[in-house]
Length: 155
Image 1 (cartoon, one colour):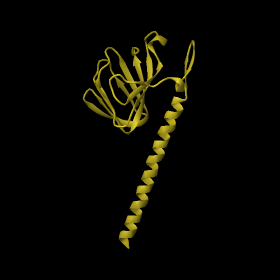
Image 2 (spheres, rainbow, N blue to C red):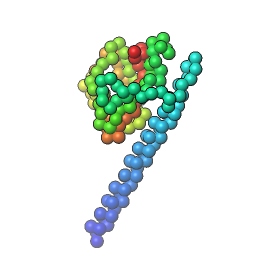
Image 3 (spheres, rainbow, N blue to C red):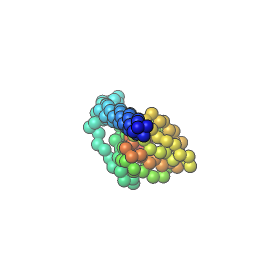
Image 4 (tube, rainbow, N blue to C red):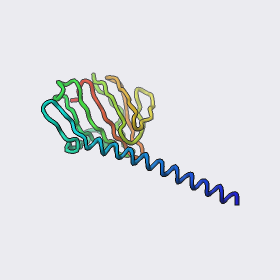
């Protein structure tokens, strides 16, 4: 009888944890959906984020970018991009010459490898990547969306 009760309690615990994980995944998805439905306002007009194309990364399979703000919009001082990394895909080790980068994880999870350090990436994580610093991002099982900003602008 005790064995049945213990197994029943374990089953209930597993279902509760599964429900909580699904709620978090749903919340992450709704954050990204809201973010992607937003607008970019510039002095000379506005642009719907939803209407901007996804641009496959030229070097990394499973990675695409939406360019929200380009260097031409900010006198090359700043650029902003949404980066989508498919589940299990990698932005492999690279540097940005003379450009600092700031990541904000807006959905999903994974790992950042920054100058030899491993950093857990989850929603709400911010990471400053100094100019000329090696870094790599690996998406988790559910993929990941980053809001990436470059100073000065990425060309």
